[in-house]
Length: 93
Image (cartoon, rainbow, N blue to C red):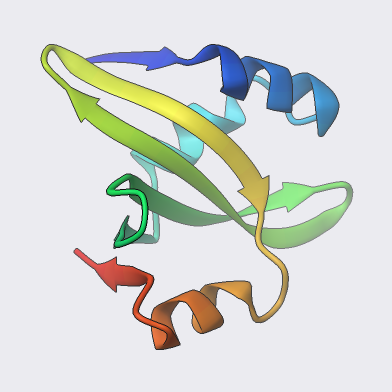
């Protein structure tokens, strides 16, 4: 399966000083997966080190014909994941 990074993700990696291999690692080794009811994108979440602290990191991705396109990555704030699940925005898959 081919996995690509969209331009938005490439910009976010630079802006947030995230190692370029981290989105792929989060996608491949996700602890949890969701679908975002607002955007229709898939979400992968994995604990990873970010600026010296272990944080939940999320990547949003889309399944396309012939592969996966990773759209964005960012660290989740402490309650962000739970709030999105409680509100129904994110549904486990």
